[in-house]
Image (cartoon, rainbow, N blue to C red; front, side, top):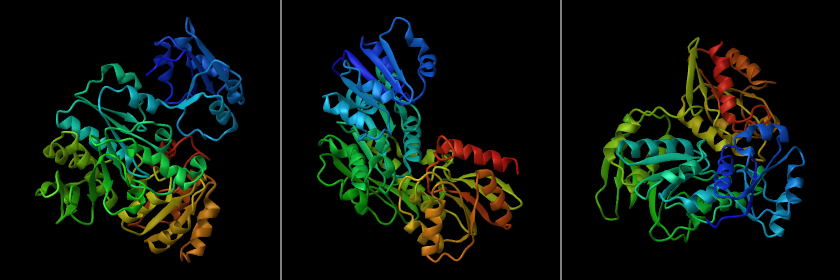
Length: 456
């Protein structure tokens, strides 16, 4: 990466924070711009303040301060920042390069990168891949959208290693190269409040394969036109995943077992019986198959993959059983920040279900949600947050013959759910909405649900 004399780190979150020492150590002047106050930022950046060329722009007008700085050559935008803000457009019009921590890592990593994206299932698949590669004896580091920047790991990376990265649409938006290995799980409307349109969201996702060449490879869902249509005409090798039929090359479910076929025309190799997979739901079988394909392509062992899936019980906040109270099971699926995730949860569980849904509005369409819930074994729905009215309208339009309740808080929603549930029921927190109207993220929402249920 060509050294810059002056860089801007716009938004000081988990991904962007490592950019500060990275560029200071390379002699650049660094500007940190964030909506937090300058005093709070100074306290956060104290280890680098003395003797460093570090400037802070904080407060509500932080972007305006940034635009007035004539020295900046490149701006690293925090994932999720709206790109068509007037100030961001002004930076671009001045010829300032807009980049990201992910783009920098992809350019500088000496280890091949295996990237995983999709509208749902990224974290589960990423975690499975990392564990199975490690169990295979492969030297691996895992990071990205999973909550850990890999930028501090750059100096220790080697060509014999793998850097496994969960990649969100926000992280892929500004990249100019693709990982050596890619897994694109699925595609459904999400984050339209930031991307502005489904087309822009899809294009961001496509970057995971767009810049691949013939030496690279991608794992794609078999017969899923939502992914395969935008994935046409990329330069990498194609492998497929299917829960419905054998695929010519890739991983698939058949005769009650998971199989891997490494080449066209070659006999498939059994990996593990589907009954041995601990993760619930057909969607998780798909995630396991995608992980299997990626692990095998990255040099892992089938035996290691089989061992991992027989012990792996999932990641927190994803169909996580919290507790059984009065013969009612309470399940935390706070990760469901869009309708398609709640569809997967409903398909994975047996009824009757008391569903807690609603939250921050990402400008998604809930008509299909209403239809799916109306036909699912749902006893009642308890709604909260900004999307409550949209979801209620969708349920009514779908002719859902079930009680629709409202709650002002998650505590009140759990209390209402407990009153609605009968022995043998499941109370499912699967909001089909983001958390930002009440919580800082879905993890905080899920943790609060746990606490409430533990105190019942």
